[in-house]
Picture (cartoon, rainbow, N blue to C red):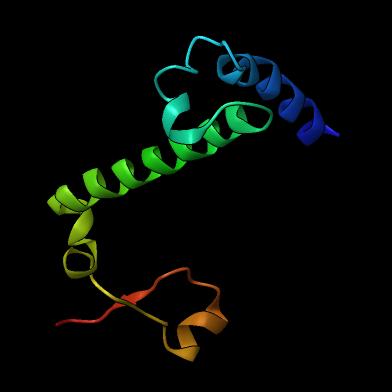
Length: 94
């Protein structure tokens, strides 16, 4: 039900932009086309582009890209420690 409400709100916002004589029909509409369903298509394309941009920015941030090398590996504690209820986790030395 919530998805239907969101879909209808998005349709009310984006669909008029791509009507036959809508505000984006002459610019972006020449690439994507005009008519029903094109507004939601613009929404999906823009979300995809944002996801690609976020991935590129994340890759360019070295602390995030190299997190596997920076963080030590966690090794399960020995059974005696686990049975005693201690939450200590041994860290493997590289």
